[in-house]
Length: 373
Image (tube, rainbow, N blue to C red):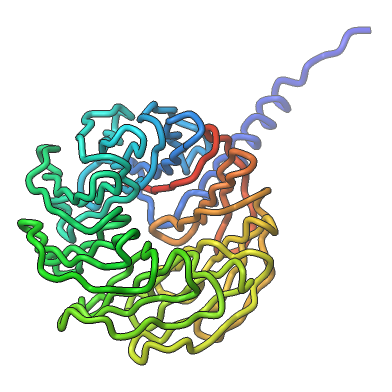
């Protein structure tokens, strides 16, 4: 028996499939993204020393780039089409050209760097080298070191003040914070804080810095105008991450052993609220309007949306085995989540709290940056 092919029907079906695919692509395309712009997530993979570039429009891996052992501190440059990061094992900063996915520079900074920060205008990058007790400033245009300074023992993180004039460095083995002149990296002051200081956030007006303790349930409040410790604020759990509200009024602290979110009033330096979230909250991302905080819980395998203004916890979003680092795309349409157990990147439609897909990364992904160019 012979079958006759209805070519008109086949053509109609192909047209319908094409139209459906276009509608899906339009629906998933972030609202802010104009034609011709690229939206890419960059994931640092500690297991194989690579960075995976993932196209967030096509929802597929675009490239795998070797960057060196122990990639960490991955950041999108604020003005240049570049992704910056560090090789903690190699002791250098690397620069990735986002348009070609090629490494253009490797800049020696000292032993065991873990994080970097950019000046507000993007002209400089600052790196603390914990293995050499040094801080370096890098000219972002020439990719060269233009200043070197000394911090305390095992400097962990260097953060630049919003006015670009001060660099704040947490010194883990000294239990101190160093204040350095951003232009010359000359020392201004050294302030004793809670033991094993690690993470730092600075208020938008540059008046205070909040510094986590790596071994105590405490956060230190440092007055950057008077160069003094204000208080070591006791917390009911470990400070696993610091997320500052854009206006600087509140500080949100996921705490794994408190199983929730600590909320600090940055004016009174007091814990104002606590929200129980789940098993082990670890990291978070906030919408630009500060209405919603998405908190990762690697032990439970989900993301917890929190409505900040009304202090309401929404239904968790299942995203994988052990979600940790997370970021929102600039328009807030898509939430991107690194799964450290399954070696995948979860893509979530933020406004409807729905998982779109899981995309494979390299081995043991950790750090994450998102770039529009």
